[in-house]
Structure formats: C-alpha cells, structure tokens
Length: 380
Image (cartoon, rainbow, N blue to C red):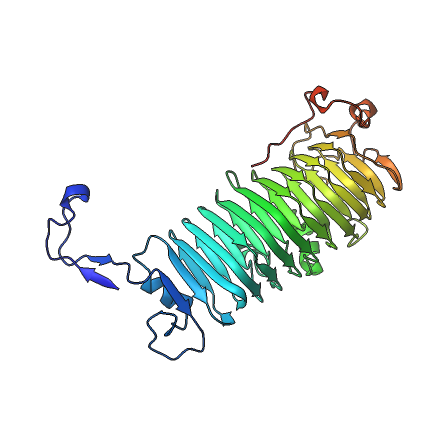
C-alpha cells in the first residue's frame, strides 16, 4: 500500500523537501501468508492469504523485514531486490527459482525443486538458508546459474546450514567472485552434476563448472561437519579461490571419462585449501589433487582411492589455463594415506617432479612448526 504526502516539508528535516504526490511505502503487514489455491482477494492475513509471493512482497513493501509464510506447496519464480525478506515453510514444496540481489534473503523449511537454472541465486547482500532441501534443478545457460543448487556471487555472504542439496543438474553449492564468502555447516551434498553432457561441454570450454561444492574466482568458503558423496566429478573443487574445510567427508567419486573426474578434493589455478580432519574414501583417481595450487591437510584420512595425493604441474594450457609459474605445494600433516593404490602420485605434464621432502606425514609433529609455505586458510 502507498500513501501520498501533500505536506512538502514532512521529510525536509532529514532528507530535503518531499515532492508533493511522491508515493511513500507504508508497512501494512510485515507477516504475510501465501497459499497458491486461496480465494482471490485475500489481504495476506492467516485467515485470508494471498496467492503469490509477489503479492506478499507488495503488501509488505514498506516493512523493514518482510516475513512471508507459505501454507502449502507452491509454484512461482521469485525475485527479491535490496530488501530483507524471510520466506518460511514447514517442509513445504516450492517449485521455482529464488533470486536475490542485495539486501538479505532468508529461507527456512522449504523443499525447492524443479528450477531451470540455479534454484537459489544471491548476488551481493546476504543469504541465509536453514533446514531446506534443494533438488532437481535443470540445466540452463551459465548466466542463469547453470543448474546449480545454490549459487552465491557478487560479493555476497551466505550462511547455509542443516540442509540437503541433491540430484541437481549442476554443482550442489557454488561460491564465485572476489569478495564472496560462504559458510556451510551440517550439509548433506550428493549426486549433483547429473547432466554429464553439460559437464563434458564445460570442460571443452575450459569452464569446469563442476563439483559437489565449487569455489572459484576469488571467493572464500568455510565448510564444516558436512557429508559429500556420489558426485560425478569431484567432492570439493576450488579454482583460483580459498577454502577452509573442517570435519567433512567425501565418498564415492567416480570418473566420468578417462580424463574427467574422480577427485575427492581438487584445488587448482593458484587456489588455497586447508582441510582439517577430512575423511576421503573411494575417489577413483585421487583423494587430494593439487594442480598448480596449494593444499594443507591436518589430520584426517584418505582411503580406497587411486592415489592418496597427486600433484600436477601441467604445461601452460593443459588442464588449468594459468601462468606456468604456479608451483603446486602440498603439506600433508598427520593424515593417514594407507589403503590406496599409491600414497603419492608424481607430476603429470611438464616441469620438475614435486619435492618429496615437502610432505609431512608424522602425526607427532607440532602443527605450529609447519613450514611457512604450508598455506593456512582461516575459517569465516
């Protein structure tokens, strides 16, 4: 609802003179109920819900914080710009996309499915996801989110917890772009990147938009107490970005082709990863892969993989199109690397093989005495 101010001096004390007839939004109702099959003409109260989230956002336009409550399964694409909005259900099915720009978007108790492109996409501002399931996205052009479950970019901050991200055509969770920060906790991420043709095309275009969790292009991710499994390419992939992983598990990562897939944790292109107490099982190629990047592990275990750790230099233009002066470094500390094909795989491509003495395998060594080149990535 809008009201019009006729008194020109009403806002003059703080913001200059008001313009006569300028619409000013008023907070009519800050908690608005939505039910898709409700009778027309509802006012947004629990007794008379409106039929769309768009109507609810219009009713609450003047409110500092709009609370939108879903009473039943719902279908709608929603766009929220520069506002604080909470969209809440009780294990309520939501068929559509939710896109936020600026402001704060909070999602709770939703089961999102069937979106074409990213199911949840936040550019700038903040995103909070709690107690949600996100599944069944469909492949779309990259500019529509590429079929990711959750995509965070544009310098946004995301806090994603107690949720399931599964069976999406694209990656499960994506954080991309300088200044973007994402924190994940108590997540179950599984069976994403279902569209294998899109994965192959992504590799052909040197894009590699893949992984259960995918961090790229200057973003920073902290992920803790989460389980990742049955991903077609890699459990966690970090490209020219930073990630802090604490108490995660990655299991069953097959190869897609003879040249694509099979990584538990993959860091490339000058990226930096610190993994504490990570458990990696049955990664077909390697549990920990380092391509001209930096990896430090503290504790944890790698088992059932082709190689526990593999370091690759690669010639310019091979695998990662980055400058050839990136020298891969892996600092493996207190991490059990038994029960694999080999504990350490050597260099692939050009350049000298990695220095064996760069690896620290003794669990008795004090982590405070690690060499300076063992990159440490702080948690958010």
